[in-house]
Length: 278
Image (cartoon, rainbow, N blue to C red):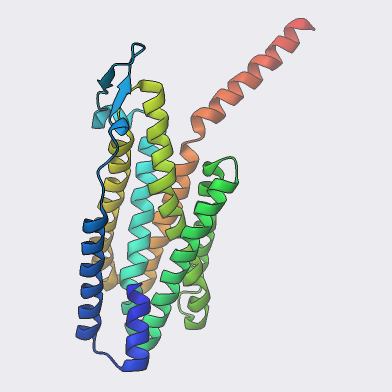
């Protein structure tokens, strides 16, 4: 809500940036205090398992290297790296680009940032709702990544058109941000729960931490990379952001290679059995 607060206070009350930051910081402090006061301890059943005799046993925790070998943990971590790289790249550098690259006013720059943030909000709601509505969360994740790739490529093509950006950036916020939220919450938690059920070890928090940590690494390295690329021009900056979104799509597809390979082998074996019967 920071972008919305900045736009409204600057547009209607002519606040300075110092006053905007002071207001956002105060709101964050109040919310942190509310979370601290309302926080409750985790229930005891979240930490223990029960043997056949009814005795509660402490479950062992999965290690980081061990967790990386499970399921799609490594693939999800790479995807999260790329998505956070692009998401925070768009979020932090968008106002600077609108003001210095397209010569927009401060209010217009904050407005388009607010639209990107609103798209992120709507995308979070939609991906969460659809992932519960459909039988597979992976289908929603795949669709979000493909749409994000399409909008990123379109944005690269119309990078010099300020009017088109008011349409594309909300769509980017919806697809990139919404997919990122789905990945780091529901998908990561489902993956951790699956590992706990199959391996009998506590793994959800570790797996979510690995995926989130790789994403945070991408966000921090992205700011450093974009700061260096600005000297080469804005096309280089948004070209890099487009490339990392494409990288997320390629990484997601790579996760299906073992399944496709297994299907190919199964089909070849069936065909071979038909030839033997003939």
